[in-house]
Image (cartoon, rainbow, N blue to C red; front, side, top):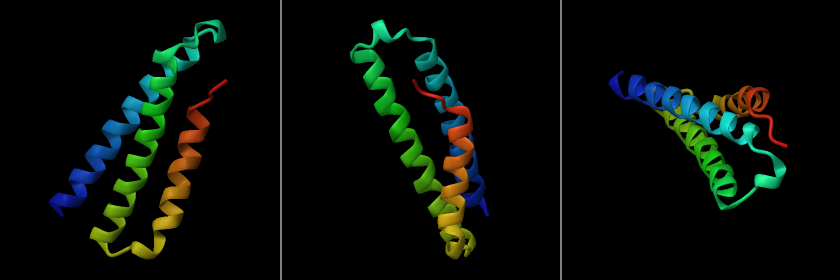
Amino acid sequence: MYARQDTLAEIACLRAKAIRVNGWLQEKDPSEFDIDYFTAVNTLANITIAIGTLLRTQALITGKASNVEQAIEQAIIDAKERWILA
């Protein structure tokens, strides 16, 4: 049970970080797109991948591996509603 709670905490931390990075990206003017902007986009993509991996790990730990695709799809849908990139 500890591992499941640990993955849930990591997912929550990653989602919070993704929201912060996305907020910073939305504040940037297109004329300001520089290496920092693209590094942040890369970071956001890596966070999304990490969340998917943690969701899969959580599904395997809990024995609900058959629902992995649904969990990942739902996470992406949830993220898509919050992450609006230009």
